Image 1: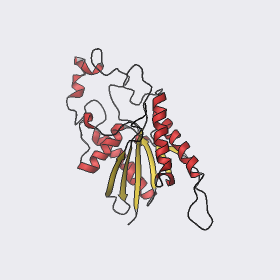
Image 2: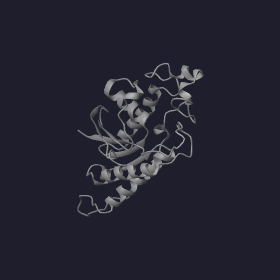
Image 3: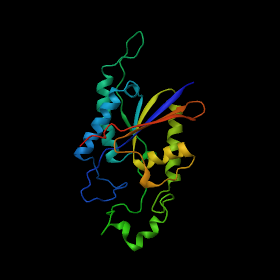
Amino acid sequence: MSATTIHFVRHGEVHNPDHLLYERLPGFHLSDRGRRMAEATGRYLAENPQTNTAVAVFSSPLERTRETAGIILDHLNEARAELVVADPNGRRLPPLKLATDDRLIEAGNEFRGRRIGHGSGALWRPENLRLIRNLYKPTWGESYRQIAARMSAFAHEKIDAYAGRQIIVVSHESPIWSFRHLLETGHPEHNMLLRHAALASVTSVTFDCDTHQVMSITYVDPAANVA
């Protein structure tokens, strides 16, 4: 039985002093702590004998995911330079390069660019209450079903393209969790307050290459103690 594992990594913390919902807006980069988070996850992936032999790295096109992926790539390629493939010629593993895919992008949200929170936060204004009628079926933007569908299309394409291999994918909390929830429950709808995908965490999904059925889902948080 051949299996493909996709390691879904959430980006690190973003520099956002005004506490805006940045969604897909440009100009939002990793904070200093976010870079340290990416470093911690990069080291974890580089030291893992499964992930340091991954054959591809993908990310959402947004700055925070590309920056997280870039740091991870630096660690992976440094480790790979010291590894050799188990063959008579002792070939060294080639360096990995980053590829972006729009299907991995953050969820669309009508609150983009606004401050979310109590007081002056957009969430609590009467004219915006229509957007938060149901936390399980969001009316504030892209639905969980739409998000999970694009993530599923990406995953099934890569299962076939990289049969029997490992790949690393850097995305965002909502896409990662919506897809995981679909795989585990059969539907992507969920309470956004109960997600379990911390910053710079790794959700690894192993699929049977022939049937595309899920064989296992594991979760680790290498950056949990990063200050």
